Image (cartoon, rainbow, N blue to C red; front, side):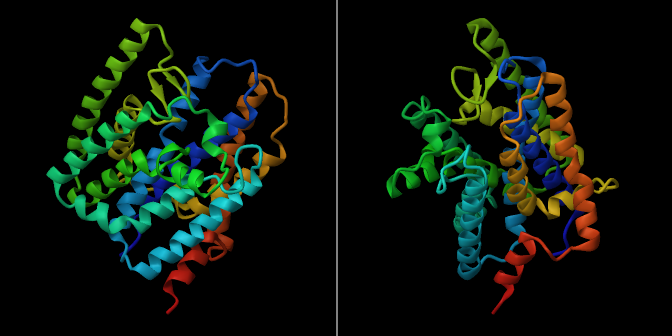
Length: 330
């Protein structure tokens, strides 16, 4: 089917947010608190990057003609790309740490299951609630793990555990966002419906904020003691992330991409892999808050014009093109 610029635009926003949060994590001054207002804004927006990325992936998968051959090629290619990311950022990952690309590999391999579920609204809601409930039950077994625990791979069994449950982007609960994206494709809710659902999510998120104030704990942190945590993705985070994705979707779906963000979306895999390289090279740069803020903003936005130049001069030179040629070969 014909590519939709608005969907590429949504993916472009996701990759920009992902670059932003990764560069902020790399160059943030050590003495800046995670409760700092700027840190909260960056963390809040950056926290929507992966949920939006995976939701768009779910939407696009419905459009894709799935075959086992294609799934195995994509699985292997994305696994290799994740290893490349890990090697390029050794300060963040072990060589075989599962991450967002291995999540996409697993999601495409299991797509026939969750795409079929997404075609029935009652089944989608029930399975979605089941995923959130099961994740909440299993959370107590690994919520104390830190970043090192979630990225260290001591053997095959630990790798598998990280893939499905204890890693940075495990299948449970992240499959929820793919299911959500697929249902958006299948049912194509109106902007009004998206905004109503988003308003409901905002109300629930406001309750979580009130509760965090009452209990005198941080509202959101990457990990540790907080109402919302990303590693692991707890129930308040999942609800807030789904809400954020709903609102972004309502704002950008069916909107013309007049400023070229859709070009970023068409290169999202390439940009995800490549953007770690400068971050790794300049990881030990010591900056003040003002300098770090300017650098993070500049580095994030730099990929926007680069994607425009790439699409104009080298449109077939990308990881996306390589993967496409591999899956289309007979």
